[in-house]
Image 1: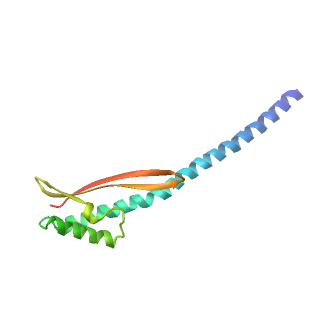
Image 2: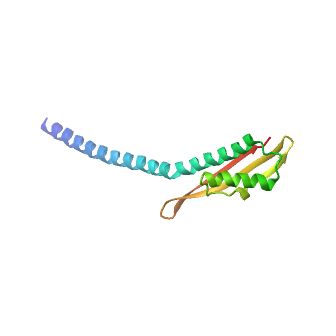
Image 3: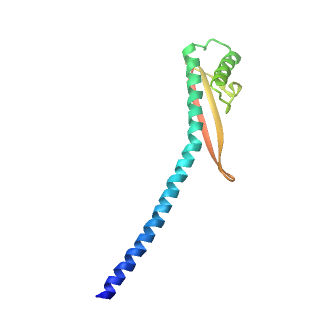
Length: 129
């Protein structure tokens, strides 16, 4: 009977050690995802600002303006919102049967750690009519 009691105690100590190691791994995984989130949230917030800048052009009813004027107005909004990932001149304006459509397509590389980076690709189309 004593040997069963010793085995149970040894088994419990082994399980406790495995639990601590398991918690350490779980904490490391959670911290990794928190780090990734902290690095990527600003990129998505900037994309939201880009989309709102494009929407404000739609609300201003600039469809009758020249393509150069539309890109200049877009760049002014980017300057106000401190958007550096893309310039107004990088926007494309395409003609559709409904009128003009403003298209933004760009990639953003976010350095994570060492030589590991995340590539985030964005594309948004905003009708101007």
